[in-house]
Image 1 (cartoon, helix red, strand yellow):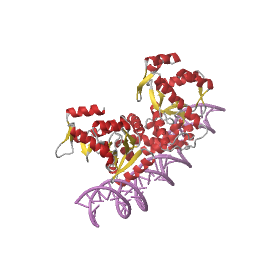
Image 2: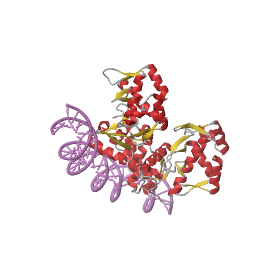
Image 3: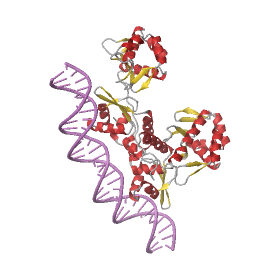
Image 4: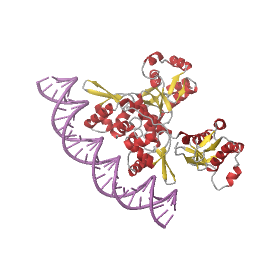
Length: 225
Length: 225
DNA sequence: AGGACGGTTCGATTAGGATCGAACTATGAA
DNA sequence: TTCATAGTTCGATCCTAATCGAACCGTCCT
């Protein structure tokens, strides 16, 4: 009579409207703060906190503290797949769908975060370094691989100086517009510095926007493809 | 805040233990009467009736009256896929309500998922079809290759009939025990049917277990090696 | 230091829905 | 016809869990 894993337990987690709204807000893979998720769900912060604790206990989301903020993201892309599948079932019996659009395109594309690159291009940089196994690690703990170190030196980064500094060489930082990890730490700063030196990009005065030249953009794509 | 289809509505249907038990009982693709489902769920006939009405309204099950019996079955194999995927999440979160009984290993080895083969052997089948380039595709979008079509016909599958049906011929379904894809769709069903016909395997009464004979297992390994 | 703000915990309230008893309908068998 | 069985509908009860107010704990800022 009772066989197999307890699907009711996990399904009932998804079955509450507030939690479902939070999860759908997280479906793009980005991380959001507790407060933002509360707003998405249309509940108070207290209620949201309770929901988030349950989702975390159920293994559906992963939490990460940064400063006084708590960021939450889907635990895993499998969770996203299940949500997609559930939407498929929901569509056949009910409601339609809508999709919002982005804002502040330039800021979202590339900007400085303290002293390193953030925005879509920052996230892309991070993703490609990871995909090419130039950096590796889990969560925030990241390090350059052997090939990565060679690559960085070749790119003109003085790794020796970075390692002498007290600042960590590699660190994952959460992006506020894309809400995914990008590369911070000494290496992140050094790479952005090299982009300036190579005239691939420049700061736009009075803003945090990093403006890539056409050639710079192409060189960037080429170097990290 | 109001984006996408209402996944909470359908998820809350799956979130009730009684309904979840009914659905898991239906996962082998067979149709059961209201009374049988009530016993599976451990509730009285009245409550079962209420649950079944809700599941039907939600498009998860299909009802069919025959004499004084009401038969219920999963509305379609997508529902089965979602249930399998949910089981995957439940297992990962350690929410496995079931003590690993003696039947557990057999279930993991080979079982029916709606009407096709799942478990280790289902995944193995899928992998080998892919490795031999008999099927190809990305994600859930899969199709038979030319050599694959020839192979299927040779194996005794009536592809013409499959293509006339509205049901997709090939489809990937996520396996809860192995957490990888196995083959669903018309072809998946047809292959399992052939396994039965060839006496390679048979259903174990009252369970979802598919029991392969020794010779059947050898023939399976041989045919898809 | 102080204060502001984001997040969490605790407790009490409340609404939704799962459940069952009883009555009702329909089918099949005498 | 009468009876039995399968299923559904109705109403009442009861229990869980979502919710928010208020207080508490950190972190950041000046």
